[in-house]
Length: 431
Image (cartoon, rainbow, N blue to C red; front, side, top):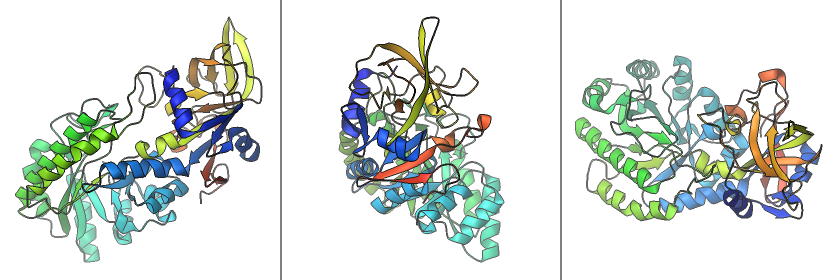
């Protein structure tokens, strides 16, 4: 169960309650459900902007921000972040098109991912992508051939799988055998091979060692190591680097005991990193960037579902709702969790009511895996009442098995300036 203090804090800091109603961007959840139907994802643009501004302030003078669109590729969400000042990191042609739909110029995008199709590479290079992060020799050969056919040099960076494994993250993507990037110990040979390709403009490096990092010291240590690798790469090339991508991995609290990433500690560590960078003339003028996803959008969203039935089975209370793992796989514990832990869940239409005991919140699918929360404190709820899963702005509908059992897609709503508008859902196109 999510820590009661965490749930209360998230409601107080990110939303609000007025009597029985949970408010999202000042609008009662009940009003959203009546207007748009349920299940729905609601995103508060003001919270997205707040997260971006806080991180940009912490990194000021050292690094820029590219939003990792995989966290939430809805073009309306992407547009909010791009207008706030973010570049965009994509990992597919579909994400490239989503960013284009949001008004992002291709030159402000980076393309990462361990398996890029030739057709994807052709499309983004022809479109003027800002940089491609190479992760295999085969991929480099494709980019070289495409550049030759177009008569241009393609800006590329090398993704490096570091020797050191990031500690404290939920999913470790470096420091071990992995399909991501080139092993650090092979860097010199790889640099020589790629730099010999005349249509590759090799002048960047990319590292991404782990996800959901909540410890500022771990994050700063990872970035320090990345700067060291950047210096080594520049020395091997014998010329200055253009870009240093430190990766993402900035986390948000979901569960009991989760800390909140201390941005003040991150900011306090930035001057040392800036000094380290400035000490090497080959990386001194490089553009440093980070590419967070969930950190920017995770806390800004919630998943709202309506109760279909309130029942008791052998002494245990169950709230069967109209949403579930087909929309929000992560909240069900089936996306990266070994042991199921509950996201913060609140009774969005009964906020002022006292809990009457534990209840499990389950979805409509024919599987016991479709459980959003187990034995969480809930008041008496009946058919038509609303339950909200907080921390749901990232890895929601596009990270879930939407086709399972052929239920309708969830509606997506953006609240901005006190106004709510539909940005996605059944037979809808995000705008």
